[in-house]
Image (cartoon, rainbow over all chains, first blue to last red; front, side, top):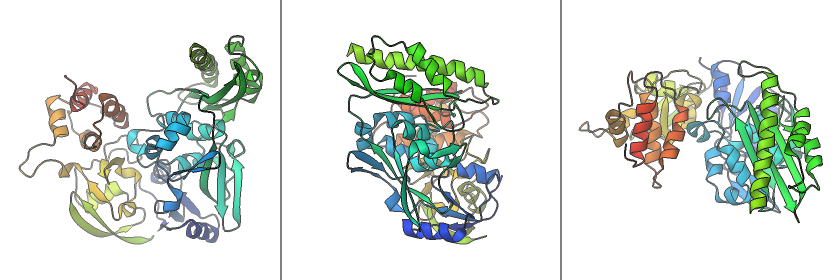
Length: 289
Length: 157
């Protein structure tokens, strides 16, 4: 239960971190908040030669406004993000999701970027990034590129990040202030990973659904965008749509798994129910307003 | 492999040491520095017994490297009671509410509650009770702990 030996490096700048990663040729692992990586090190499921600690790179922390979007520094801790006034007003759905990440104590060190880059399929932050249409900025000594969050995930814990790349910004586009948030997760206990989770946002214009973005977590190898359900929602008015039918479309796109907490069938059954309930409640609240 | 010189304060006292990169803060505090109030349970971030306060925030010390605490102010359970033995309000609340039995998980619970109740913004019971999800206790059935948390939030219990 003790980590295997490694060389610890703590760069002060993004450039320095990228140079270390380039030179390490895949032998380095980046530690952000460490709330997932430290257990893996302790269990020796991860045994890097070099551990690159990003905690002193101030340029990777904080929330700023850019053109029609909010830029979140990946090293912003989950609790700092929850308390951030810009995120509370611009991205309340993200703040709501972050309250479900781990426990108070792990949110004090755990970071948004660490969770997004790690790619746990049942985690809230990756699905939030996908549902909100975030763009992820990746840097290396070779240059900068941006990847939409819904093209970022390849499988459980597998992303398009190359070994020499660093996640340096999470850009979340603005959503209309009256967007209807959808969030629900079923977990064994508060703070546990979700058995089934759904996050999304719906935009209504003149009484009809103009935009819908919905993503599942814990329902397959990656966060899963419910594209057919989104398409089916567009143009509908909340009074006439049948949530249970949309839920069927949404569940058909998932590929849940069996584990010692729940079977795939359980996840599908519960997923369909929470989808129906969450969509109905979200649009019902809207109608009443 | 790599060794690092660190300097930090623990309960107000400056300490410097040379640590291996892989040394966890929990092992540093308990084994190297002798703060045996840091109880190391699961060693992988599940049980919460090793929770300490780092720069004002409750964190699991097994999920942090000692080298990462370089320059930080750390408080362990040894740093809470007054020199004359008067208990910290959190310790007193747990005692009054029978919030402990064997005591293994207790230092972690005390540190989380102490960090939260030291904030200017006085937290409500919901916040304190919610933060208790980060601790596992196998003796009490949690009711005494919850009662102490509610008392600390100013509720009549």
